[in-house]
Structures are given as structure tokens and as C-alpha cells.
Image 1 (cartoon, rainbow, N blue to C red):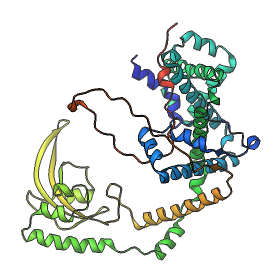
Image 2 (image 1 turned 120 degrees about the vertical axis):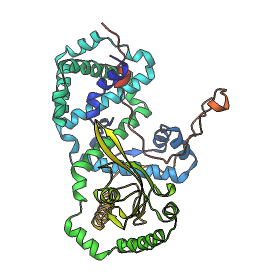
Image 3 (image 1 turned 90 degrees about the vertical axis):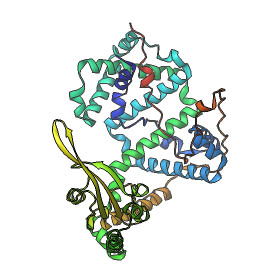
Image 4 (image 1 turned 60 degrees about the vertical axis):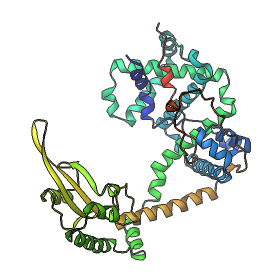
Length: 425
């Protein structure tokens, strides 16, 4: 079995658990609410990717935004815990396993290659203890309840593979605990952050999303109070003027570059070759009705108003059957405020988004107002160390890294991958 397949098998349980979010037992009732000191913030910031860390080191506004984002995250997590989000038995098992994964990863990072030298026999001995076997069995059952399709995919052989890899995670977690890794600031804070992420994800999905959902009555009321300009009428008027110019002999590609409003604009509206089922039905019907060199009347789709010019036709054989393809250009007239990369939005869609954003902002402010979370905004961040560069010929030198916006810390990668390297009995 190749290493890639082993890694996939090792991560099979973790994948179902939504991406590396882990559990940290916050003893809020005993030790008080979350409070991140300036030193804590420095540790979290300096654990970011080099581009993000560089920005945090040099931009005071970025540091304050980073701190505010963390305060929001921990405040919502605090509210989630107050509402008992972490009481569900399956969710607890999910959280506990993710905690095991992260601690195993930290152990693997410290130990290097030796961390994964755990034999099959050691894993078998670990699961020979009833309490450990029960923990694994319950974990698998929780996964199956979350994803019923997985039951059919879990053959006896695959289950054995997963058990071996999960066992290695548990054994590395045990070694991490013996070394006291949880007490190290970097590990403690990462566990704390990931716990908050996990709580917020579940709370938002199960509870908060329902609280901010816009009703049909609210959408109707919003649209009445915020009437939208008839951009469709304006687009049709503009398209009619451009169509007259095309009929008068002006170059279609040049007019597409001047008036087009989608990604084909710079290419003179060139859509390339396409076949049946690849375009909106109304667009496709109009394009296929043209002869090479012909220009359509105005064609309306949910994306806006189009003028189409057919360049050429050809027939291809696909899976033994003839398939007629067309090469066309178009000029699209659409709302200038719409997202050119997204799906077209109706006035009701825009109203729903505005309402739910307003409700979400208000709900977040309410949660923050009753939160006891404290996060230091004034902290220092050292720039990332420059990696020594090797003397490579200019043509082989890597391009400079692009700038990235700062963001909250990302979940750690699953340690199940290094665990895939094993020593046989």
C-alpha cells in the first residue's frame, strides 16, 4: 500500500470530523473566563504563517484587528458553552479525538522521525485493554452516525488499518501527556483556540444560523423600504444602443471590450467553443439558432442582457456520437454592483443577505456585551526569520511570495499522516 493511501486511511475518521478542530477542556466555572495576555497574543501571532506574521509585526491596525477577531471568537465560544453545546455525547467524542490528534502532532514535531516508530504490536497491546477498545468502538459508531454512508465503505480490512493509525495517535498523545506538552504556552494556546473554533462552528450551524434567518415577511418589508433601481431596464437600453452600432458595421470585439461586464471582456467577448448543456438554456438556444457571422437580438438570462455573435460551428464525435459545437462571442450588460464571479442575485436575494448581516451583527454585539472574555490589543510580534537562501542560478530562483491578509490561526494539520509510517511486528 503506498504512503498516500496510508495517509488517507489514517485520516478517514478525522475527515468526517470537519477538518482538524480539537477539544480543550475549558474550566470556565473554576478558573474564570478566557483572558489572553500580551504574551499570549505574541505566542499566537508568532505561530502564524510567515506572510501573516510579517504583517502583524509591522502593522498596528492588523494586530488590533487580529485581537478583535479573537475576542469575538472566544465570546461566541463562551456563549456556546453556556448553552450546553458541548454536552452531546457524540460531539464530546469528536472533540476528544481531535484533541488527541493535535497533541500527537505536537509530540511528532518534537520527536521527529522517532515519534512514528510505534509497532503494530504496541497498538494491539493498547487496544487489548477493554477501556481503550471501547473508546475506539464508540468513536467509530459516532462517525457512522454522523455519516451513515461510511458504514458501507468500512470493510473489515479498512477498519483494521484505521484502528492501527488511530491507535498510534492515542499512543503519541499518551507520550505527549507524559512529557507535559500541554503545559507549554504554544500548545496550551493552540488547544484553547481550536476548542473555541469547534464550539463556534457547531453553535453557529445548529443555533445561531436559525436566529438570523430572514423570513419572507422581513424580505418583503425590506424590499418595500429599499426599492432597487431597475437595472434590467437600464441594461436593455444600453444593449439596444450597442446593438445598433453593431448592425451599423462597428467591430463586435472592440465593442465587447468597451461595454462587456464579465471575464470575457478583455478577450473581446470570446467564449471559445462550447456544446449543449454548457450554457444557460436561453443563451444556448439563441446561440445555436445563429449562422456563422450572424448577431443575435437581445437575449436575457438571470446573468443580464446579452448580444451574441456566432463565429463558427463544428461537429465532434463524443463517446461514439456526433456532437455539434459552436464558437461564439457575447457582450454582457449586467448590474455593475453584482459579483462577476458569483451567481446572479435577485432583489430578494440581496434583501435576504442584508437582513441576515444586520441580524448577525446585532446578535454578535449582544453576545459581546455579556461576555467576560478579555484579549490584549497591545502586544509585540517579531518578524519571521529570513530563511537562508542557496546560491541558485537566477532562472531557478523562486518568485517572491505574494502578500496575504492577516487571518485567525488555522487548525493544525492532522498528525495521522506521520502516524502512517509504522514499524511492523
